[in-house]
Length: 295
Ligand code: NAD
Image 1 (cartoon, rainbow, N blue to C red):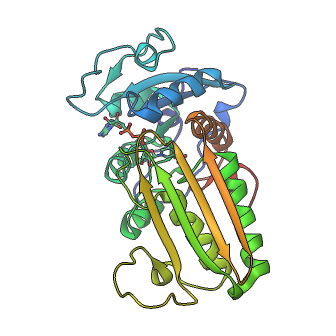
Image 2 (image 1 turned 180 degrees about the vertical axis):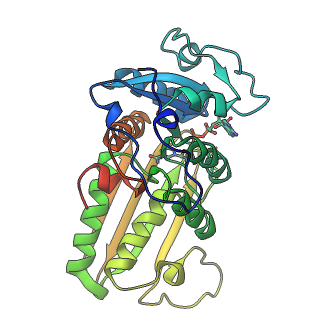
């Protein structure tokens, strides 16, 4: 399929009229580009796109100066040569692609969104660590193009979000809520985007403002725990892919809802699924709960 959204849609302007990208994608392969192709998630994403029905890898990028620039994306990912060269020219890559998968960092994602919006292309992003202002900027781009943004693309974690809501509804204010997450020693943001989302889900269900009740630090004579606070603790070390536990602690009993990621593959498969799901969608901001039909 040589067509792309830019050639079928008038170029949108930021904050402009909503439009959907797509009927032309139906019954064809969606062309997918991957940014950060040499990263920890990049390789898994290349594999997931190769394995997914209806998706085709059309481009791959890395940051300027990256040692893997100019190499074959498939070779770098360890899946064999694919004839897709890793480049730093995202604009050229997006001329060929229908959708960009981006697992990078908030400032990089926002720069990538600018390119996608200018070209009328869709975006699936798993980047984490957005500030409220950066989330607002993403939402503004979603006026122009369909975007899936999710701090965790695994089905298991998204099932946990649902379970947390139900559990908090049943237990109400009688149980203290604490969240502990563990990740590898290269992770840049803390707490993880998944832990933050878990805290938000519980806080929203209990009618609290996460930004006011999240407690990230206890040290010295910090006083008794308040009833409303949600403790957020992080552990960093080695190669832990990602583990999250939400504790609901009552008098004489405790519920723990835990998720452990054993590999990065299910995040990548979730991203591939999100690409297919975006087909035919209106411009807007979606998450994995939408993709999985859990909303
Ligand atoms: P990583 O550092 O291994 O990979 C990021 C890659 O992006 C690197 O290769 C880096 O060189 C590249 N990059 C940086 N700037 C770039 C630019 N301007 N253009 C092109 N490439 C650029 O990190 P990672 O462990 O793969 O994680 C990436 C992000 O994905 C993090 O925010 C992490 O929290 C998130 N993540 C999300 C999920 C999820 O399910 N949503 C799962 C795992 C990780």
